[in-house]
Length: 339
Image (cartoon, rainbow, N blue to C red; front, side, top):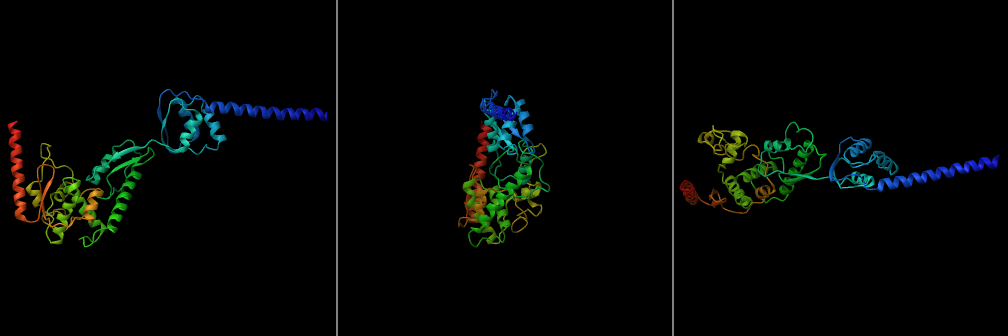
C-alpha cells in the first residue's frame, strides 16, 4: 500500500510539473507570436488605468488576440503595475510581449507646440486652451505678464495645461535669473523684473533678432539721460492689453493721436521710466539684449521701410531718417496705385 501511495504521489508531482511545463511553453509561444494588428496605430494609456482595462482595450483595437495572455505574462514578470501613462506608436504585428515592453519602457509619442516670442500672456493662454492635446483646465489666477518663456516645447499626452504653463514659468524664471547674474555692470535696473520689462519692450520694438541689441541700447541710453522712453508699443498695451488695434470696420490700425495723448501707467510719452509691468513675453534674445546690451550712443531709431531700422545719435539725423522713411512710404503707395 505504501509503495502504491508513493507511486501515486510521484505520478501527481510529475503530472503537475509536466502541466506547468506545458503551460509555460504554451504561454511563451503566445506572448512571443506576432499579434493581429494590420496597420500601425497609436495606443494611449490614460491616468489611473489598470492592466485589465489596457488589455481589453488593446483587444478592441486589434492589437491583441487574447487579453488573458497579456495579463498572465505581466503577472508572471511582475509588471502588472509598471505601465506608464502616455501615447505609444504601436507597430504592425507586435507580439503581446513586445506590446507590454512598449508600455513599461515608456517611450511615448512626443507632441510639440511653438509659442512665438512677443505674445502677451492672454494670447499664449488662448493657444494653450485651444490645444486639445493638453489635458485639464487653465490655472486660476493666470500667470503674470512676461512670466512665460516662448519657444518650442515637447510634451506628452499626459501633460495638463496647468503643468505645461508651470513649465513655461519655470523656464522664464531660470533664464532671467541666469542672465541677471551675468548682466553687464551699470545697467539702470534695480531688479530682474525691471530688466524683464525692458526686454518686453525690446521684443516688441525690434524689427528682427538682429536689432535687439541696438534697440535695447536706445532705451537704456534714454533712461540714463533722464529722457522718456516714448515707445508706442507700451502705449498700445495700455490701450487694450496688446491685442491688435482695429477700427470700426474691423481693420487693423495704428494708434490714434488721442491714445498717444491719453495718460495711462503705460504711456511712456506722458510718464517717465519703465511701465509698471512687461507688455509681452520676451524670448531669450530680447532678455540677453536687455541685460547685455552693446555700448552705443544711439537714442533714436525709425523703420527704414524694408524690415529694418535706422539708428541715430541725435535728433537732426533722426529727422532725416524719418523723412527718408516717409518718402519711401509715398513711393510705395504711388507704385501700388500705378499697378
